[in-house]
Image 1 (tube, rainbow, N blue to C red):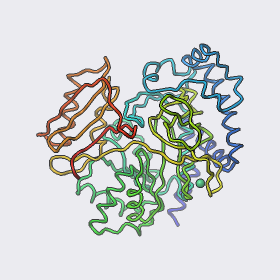
Image 2: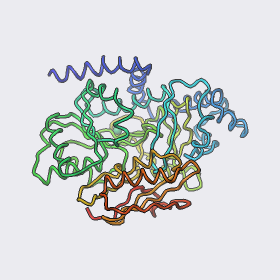
Image 3: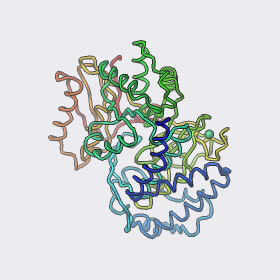
Image 4: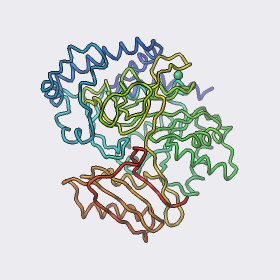
Length: 452
Ligand SMILES: [Zn+2]
């Protein structure tokens, strides 16, 4: 088929050229990863140890923050002989990154770009990503995509994004997306009209793959089902979901309506491409690049099989290191191996963040992102939580720092919230010292008490 020839052209010529022009080594990294995924678990641990040692030696030479930290603790990366020695280093949290963002940059850093994210815990974070890391993260995603018999260049519908992400960063991306047949649909507004629009687009594009938040894909699926629209015969091969916890009822709904399996991915811009599901169901860790530890409340490493916070060391981050970075997500490492034969270790469970939908006064259902993005982008916001108390009242709690400009910030928040929720809505802004976690230990940053 012509379509397959185009996909192969994208995957073997166009995308490699695109990456080479950006000075990325993505193609080579992916090829290596396609080999190493089949190594035995013990060989993969050996590979991790070799890479961890080289990474820490490099960081010791070039990153002022860690050079000083290693020296003050008498930690010599040359003497590393066991992966467990990683636990001798302190955990890295968002506050530490915020306070040391200059000293965390390598003195010979290559291609650093600034990123801003809510991370996985709802605490805003500004950090940097170098060229090497981009290559590795893209390669890991590419490898996992190919597990599902689809490839870069296959038509893809991406249901994603906040207005900011779509607006400022990505004019070039729009052109690139056109080449690679990626169709971007902004997902934060879920009115019946928008949902009909998404469904129409999907019918027209006939994508081989879908990509989006599980909540958003499940919502579209439900709308199609309610209106008797059949989407299961479009030839969609897989629905990739990420960024939120995937619930079983969402998986069932997406699978049923789109007629394809759901592949769950776990990671973020901050922590990297941590794990991805294979067609046999295993949630494989990108172990060549990422060492996952599970820790308890006191930061002590827990044995395999126990639930705790997911902490990652990303071995391709020498330009701006993430070493024992606290994701704020809860998870369990598995002792099992996967039937697919890949030696990559498995996460038994991930309990990522959850995002509630909110409802505007006119009844429009909105993804939580429609409100989150304005808070993420303000200076001086350490943490936040949005609670929709009723159709007429929404509260925002903000833990602020000295960089917070109260008058202009409140003006922005109120303007965006009223534009989304309705002009008559009362917006109540509070400034607590800290924001308590849910009973589950999980931070939820948008909660709605309005029945949808
Ligand atoms: Zn597998």
